[in-house]
Length: 176
Image (cartoon, rainbow, N blue to C red; front, side, top):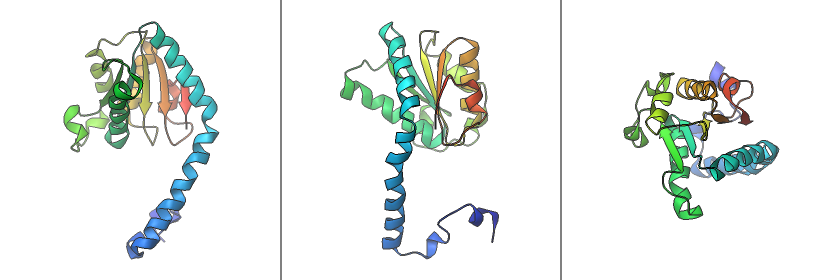
């Protein structure tokens, strides 16, 4: 057994039928609501902190790379039509810039200083909030961005799948 197989509860997916794959996906999807329920307290805390800053003119930034970065951008782009906020109030940033929304930009996530540069292009201030999104909790773009934000007294949050990660050292509120 390889090391990859030892960590997977679903081995040899390539040998399964379409129906078996759909059943596996559906089984995993059912777990999501229960996992979110475990995090409701920290989700509420983060939302309340962000809202307080937004009431005084602050903005919310998401920073991430790859799929997490794209999800932040999707959320930010849906907020104006759904909640009636201005387009410049909730902003999603992705390692590799706008090109990375539709294309893989290898190594863009490895730059610990780029998130801060991207945030500075939007005139980030201590009124704003920044939420890093990283499944692993160790993406350098997110870790560096959160660290620089904390050094500048900007509220930081983290959405991650793992506890006690590098990024969690620089997050005021952690949602796992």
